[in-house]
Length: 140
Image 1 (spheres, rainbow, N blue to C red):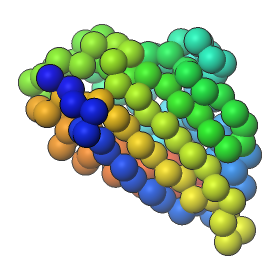
Image 2 (cartoon, rainbow, N blue to C red):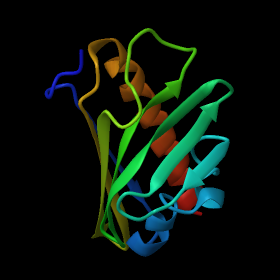
Image 3 (tube, helix red, strand yellow):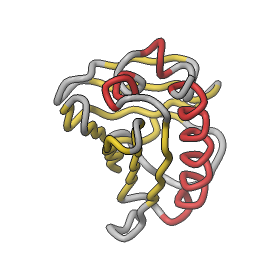
């Protein structure tokens, strides 16, 4: 069962302007550089977000906030998954991204809330990896 306190929080500094980093959360070609292999992104409130993270693992939800270049948020859950025990249906958790201008670049703050106990550690580890990949892709 998901608990309100089950939250993953991560930060990463990227040597690029917030407007540039923001595009990596709404442009399928740019998102493919740091997370997933197939994307359907309709980056507007209520628009669909669907990411094939890896074969058989599809996350989906909808955008709740699109406020360029400062903030973007979307619901998140799994249509199908073959890698972990637990239940997180599409749209049942929330990923919030804040982009803060800092030192000539962007401080990216990610907060993923309402995660079920069995999936908390996996999401913690994966967001760490994906944000590292985002830093490499967006900071070039």
